[in-house]
Amino acid sequence: MKKFITLLTTAAAMMLAGCSDDSSQSDVIKLVAAHNQTNISNPYQIGMLKLKEVADQSGLFDVEVHAGTIGTNENELVEKLVLGGADMVLVSPGFMTSSGIDEVDLFSLLYLFDNYQHWEKVVDGEVGTKMANIIHQKSGEKYRVAAYWTAGVRHWYGKQAVNSFADLEGLKIRTQTSGVVSQYWQDIGAVPTSVAWAELYQALSSNVVDAAENAYPYFIPMEHHKTDNGKFISETGHDYTTRLLLVRNSVWENFTDEQRVEFEKAVKAATQAERQALYNEESNYKQQAINDGAVVNSLNRTPFIEKAVTIQNEWAKEHNMTDIVATIRAAK
Image 1: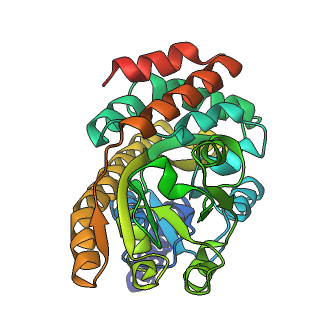
Image 2: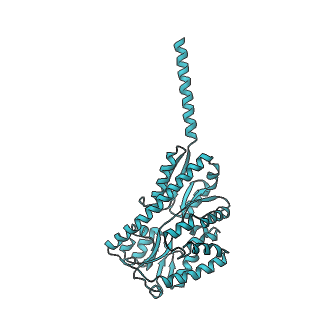
Image 3: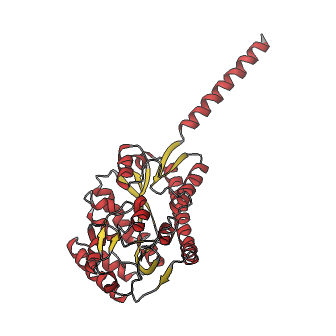
């Protein structure tokens, strides 16, 4: 009898332990995080994997990272975010202007930032907070900005070097075909042309476009510089890019205080990892381009900057953001 009671007690303890394990497992929040780049050595992926590492270590989260596997189109990623197919996505400001959040075009203004230190000071400071609040409100509180990441500093690359506006006249450049970016290239003589990123190598090879613009860590791995229409790289440095790490608002609001602290810790670590990976890769990929036979030139950027300032002023006045643009300039 005594042995039977002992067995019952042991079984009960095991059942309780099992229930406890199930309960702790149910407290783990699964998060699906996605970006649109299929290159798994991309800084986006490095950042996302750091997010997973730090978040998972807390024991509170189980992060699943998707590198282009649930969508390579940003509109598609945001749709999944809103509908619940993803919990976090990384996107550029461009998609938001088509959804009515015109203020986010602030980050698309060319020559707005002098260098990465200037950019970080702005996005991690008062301006970044204000923009995050605007995005949250104008999205109908569907999502919020968890952090600002970067896709590098963008340069012109094409079939010939650029040293002046005259060198751009009539050339078809793959870039945004609407908004302030398109306006800038049109105003200085180029012809903005829409080409999907995955199709750009072929478009450069077959003269569909004469040029494109992007950062070294993005167009060099795609071997755009090996095409006749991509071998001349002119370091215009026209855009220190901003990318938005978004989290669905309902996910954020359901976090406990402890979960929120650990989530923010993971986001901070991921943001540092993504930025540093990008910074490290720029010089490496530039050297690779030169080794592969690309021709890199620097240029007098002053006329290009002056034209951009005119567009910045017009845009800021139209969108009642003159004070914010002034704050950014003062942070240089």
